[in-house]
Structures are given as structure tokens and as C-alpha cells.
Image (cartoon, rainbow, N blue to C red; front, side, top):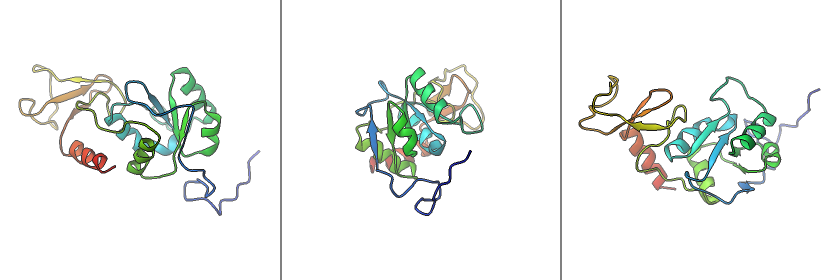
Length: 183
């Protein structure tokens, strides 16, 4: 059985004009040390920014190519424990801990998170992989370095323990940092 929906009052991704705005439910803000997130399929770009801010951020499509469904997200959030971030009113209402976002742009979404008490500043050193959410560690002097990375004698490098991606605080980091400073 399918549900007929009137989409005349919705934007292109189905969020209706009757959306109540940014709402935090079951949680009063937090920091990367005390909060882990689970993002639904609408918030993939936001995942990278939150990981750069040091948050343990799982994304619904990290481990599969299709939407796992609301029930799966709610169960996973309860089991791990995580705060669900979503633009879906129904999902936010059903989740014990959630933040309902209104914006599409990741920087605007970060502003919304900041407005409900979450710290959205970059960490001094990366702690999470922006690609897979794994923990990162310093690259040692004898560790192999991929060709795409700068010389480790000139720039500090970190490697993801899970996927092996190498990171450094380069132009992308500085760009994100300047955008976050504008929030």
C-alpha cells in the first residue's frame, strides 16, 4: 500500500512548507566528546563537516547503497547510542533523541546545530576520517606516505585507522575553518 502525498507544498526533496523549523528533541546540545550522531540519507554532505569538527558521525549510506528506512535508523541510534539528525519530520518525531533540520546547505545546517547548543568548531587536530568516520592517528616518520600527500617533514599528517586515507591541515581545512568562523 502506498500513501498518497500532496507534494504541492513541498520543496524538491519532499520537506513540506509546514515543517516546524529546527527542533532538538531529547537532547540539549553537546560536544564531540559527549555526542555521537546518525544522519539520515538527506544529510551526506553534513557528515563530512561534523567529522571534521570531531563528532563520531555515522551516515545512513556509509554501509549500504539504499535507504535503510526509519525503523532501522531508530534502532541503530538506540543501540549505539546516537542522536538522529534529519530533515524528515516523521523520523524526528519517532526518535527519542533527534534534531530536526530545515536547511539544505551543510553550513546552514551547522548554524542550526549551533543554535540548539552543539559545538561546531574544528578541532585543533583531526580525530575522525571525513570519508568513513574512522579514528585517525599521526603518521609516523617511517610510515609510507601516498604520492598525493605533502612531505611529512613540512606538514603534519594523519591516517585513518580504518580506510587508510591520509589527511593534513591544508587549503580545504582552512576553507572549512574560515566558513565555520563565519557562523
